[in-house]
Image 1: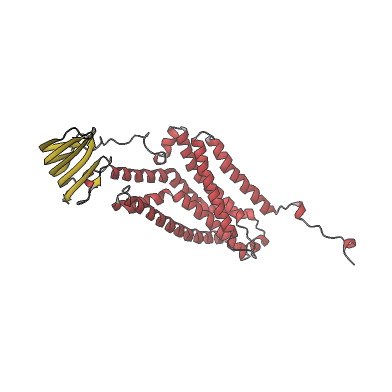
Image 2: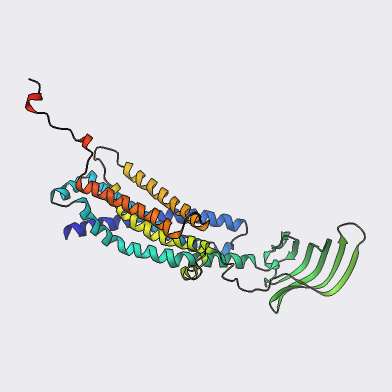
Length: 370
């Protein structure tokens, strides 16, 4: 009982500290990335914090897996350095006896990883994509900054308004330069507003002038109008499942339509859960450290092993998506192979298996020098 409670208590402290540090690092990186997207006009500046939060939630399976791996390796390595492992081994505990308390500590974290990978990851991506799409589909008037020339969403119109208005759907002293039907059209009006007519969105201008000039100079047409309307929006229909990015599709949607793209994404999600389970076992076997050696060697090796495993997981997703491997073959080769490697390594350390060449035979009395 003391063995289990002591180990789990120290693992909890190490896991909590590691989680705070990694989340802080990831949030800082995501904040810089999101601010960059906002400066390019891909993200609404007022929704930077929300987009960053959704992005961090999407990466929680990776963060939790790395935290679990580092906490196990760090805790057991400290016990090796402080000779606590020698005490437990002398009391009859083997290295395999550390497995049950490790998994007893890790199962809530593994459950969270499964929830985030199978449910949280597609939900966070769908929310982020929806906000970006909504921001991209905003009206052209909303894109315009008073006193500045701005391009429209399709980049075939240039807008200018004289001053700001209390309503974002209206503007005054509007100037529009566009290219339509091989003609350069310049339109100016005293005021303009956005109206939704049916499923389409229109820009209605009042009291203005329109100049039409063919790109091949053959003449100029000038006309005045009291009211002029131009369609600027789409039909506003929601995106279908086929147009939804695969990373934003729910896990049930992937299983209902098991094509190669959906199977590759499902393999990545379920692979995050299987990888986290393997990391518990691998953390147990790679944590052995020589007290006289360096303190960070095994931790660096653990980080290297995590990076390799994670890249193989992404590479396997690509191979499944291109039909180079089947989903079952990929899961069995990567995760099954990692499991067998961990079990073989654990058995070697638990039973202290050594190669015959490394065992030095004791010299016989007649062989000793006189």
